[in-house]
Length: 233
Image 1 (cartoon, rainbow, N blue to C red):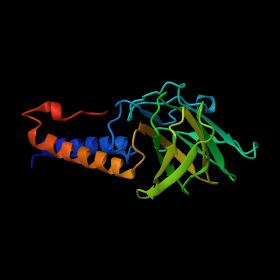
Image 2 (cartoon, rainbow, N blue to C red; image 1 turned 180 degrees about the vertical axis):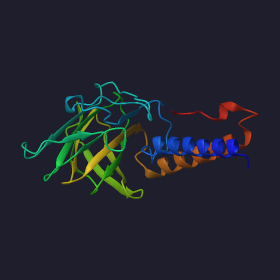
Image 3 (tube, rainbow, N blue to C red; image 1 turned 90 degrees about the vertical axis):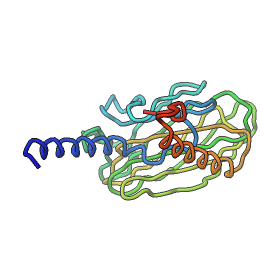
């Protein structure tokens, strides 16, 4: 192989690797289509310190807001004298703890609908010890109580973890805290929600299967009928 061909191949390989790394933070996207009715999606990359209140970034995952306010996060320490530390991390920003844990408090607004259940998925890319959801609350304007059921915590290799919840009835917004252990960091957080009419995990399983079949069909027939594929950046 000629020298210029080798160089081109190397450049293509580096570019592909960077592209994979850039999208690796969205490691467990939901089985539904982002942007469909009654869905929300939010991504924080912590690209700057932004006075520890960082707006959704939207580079990997498009920000899709509900009707009850812009998604918000506050980053704080407990005790307060061990402040969170922002740095470039692996190049796109991160918040790190010192000798004590730090916390990230999230508020996610939803759609005003009457569906009986909401699914909440929280993806976290981290360094050091895995974070945990230390508290979670949901508020409904008319229901006297809101039930929150953890449905899974899944590790996707080193530095990637997914938290899943079912919430009854669909709340107008929820608030939760991520606890980042001492000497650890968070690089990115991606949050997806959907409110649906049937409170059954079988619905999500069916959505995932249909999504997979649709992608495979799109791979085979994308040139015949490109409308089979809906690309989400």
